[in-house]
View 1 (spheres, one colour):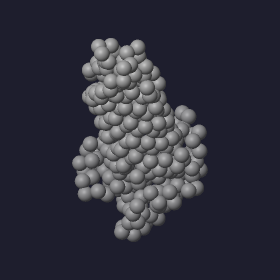
View 2 (cartoon, helix red, strand yellow; view 1 turned 60 degrees about the vertical axis):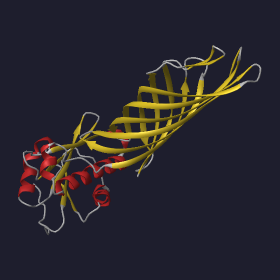
View 3 (cartoon, helix red, strand yellow; view 1 turned 45 degrees about the horizontal axis):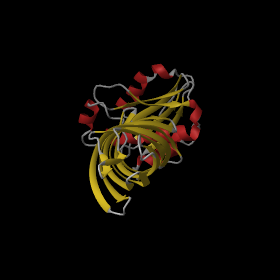
View 4 (cartoon, helix red, strand yellow; view 1 turned 180 degrees about the horizontal axis):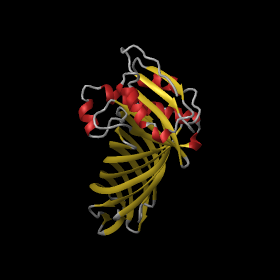
Length: 312
């Protein structure tokens, strides 16, 4: 059996119990102290003879007796580990904090578990913990701001062909269980070079804004995401006829679309990703010179690119 020593009640206490089959994580205690952002006491207890999947009742007893604010232990599961926790939240004996892939390495496992434990402490010790527990989000990490820059290649169906596009977006991300939800605002710039037609030449510059709701699923160092979005674009077209007459036109082009991709963590705050998407125009526009279509903006367009996301 094992013993967790009694400690002063001034600071929350996290008991890390190393049950049977748990990975060796020597830096986990210090990672929790780093990410918790508060005075926290972390106790590591070896209990290699204890079966992790039946430890929940004993963990709840430790919390009820005041020996720990939160008890955390790790159970081996297929292709990875399941991190469990017990704490003083109403109506629940324990929660599943996160599942991690065994292949991501001990350092990334330590960081992932520490962030989840820090979020659990924030929720558990907040004044409104009762309401949050009733909603089932006691394990949620604090929300974070995200800044994303991306460079993509857009494939237009007609005369515009392939265009480069620069994107800047900002989002606010919340953790809900194993998912992240992030409303986002984005802006982009997409120029098109000269387009020749029998009766003249045209060039197009597109500037747009988008609102999106992103859903992410962290998988260790990787993060899968998808985001439906609405885009409002403004296009400025400049045309020159074959006899050198010139003109400008402004077009508003609303789109609905969907983006999806995959990110990989480069550090605690940086993620590199690939993104692909499709947009469908709500209005079909054509730009004409002397009655002849020079640029057909089409109905559907695709894009693919690379993004860099920073947590602020």
